[in-house]
Amino acid sequence: MRMVVKVGSNVLTRPDGKLDITRMSAVIDQIAWLRRQGHEVILVSSGAVACGRCELSVGHGLDSVEQRQLFSALGQVKLIGLYYDLFREYGLHIGQILTMKENFEPGEQYDNQRACMTVMLENGVIPVVNENDTVSVTELMFTDNDELSGLIALMMRADTLILLSNIDGIYTGPPGDPAARLVRVVEPGRDLSKYIRTEKSAFGRGGMHSKYTTATRVQRQGVRVMIANGGRDNILVDLIRQPALTPHTEFCVTEG
Image (cartoon, rainbow, N blue to C red; front, side, top):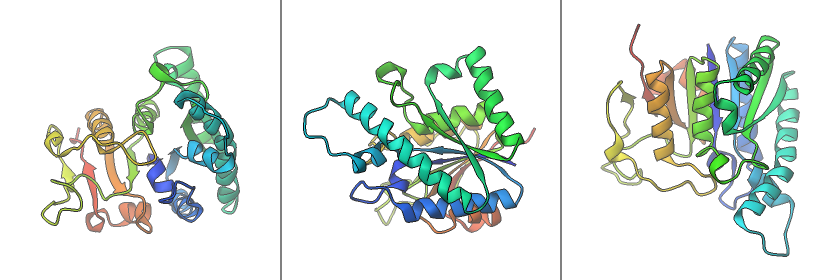
């Protein structure tokens, strides 16, 4: 199985906005387990801007674009360095892919990006993908890394896309409401938009609306999609071993 695992900022950061190294390490442990089971994994990771904010205190005013460029440039170095060290403990190699929306238009850049990740996977290297925030601004940006992970899943013909959030999945009401129920299975064509709130996540650009939009689009192309809680211990392992017992929302695909 070839799978794309997207880890959002709300999974990788603590409530104070700093990077959660313990959670990050736990995700790597699980990806290493997936690799031992013979699965190919592409990791789409947020967290560069959060890393950058922790590294540098700026004493003068910067607009939102300048902050994003500065903190992402600084933080991406730290983020990929952490991934390198953590994966190396398992003897696993990683390669960095920084991409932009224009790379997904049909043409040479699309073909080159797909070829790069293909040769990485063929040689046992895990692609770690993020948006190139230093040059992707305003209309050049992806909506968020949910959109990016969906495009990667389609480009690389993945079997499964797993979107790790800070809640178990899509609920029929606010997750904190005792009456709200987790929607566990989404059949093709089922509309859940009435349940989706448009609020953004605390430290990222996404939210459940973005995840639902991505999942619906990717599902139509025959890719199995799961939205699950990245804060749960061994969530990736459980999704593969015993998905029926693991709280999550799964977008099924039709057979044939």
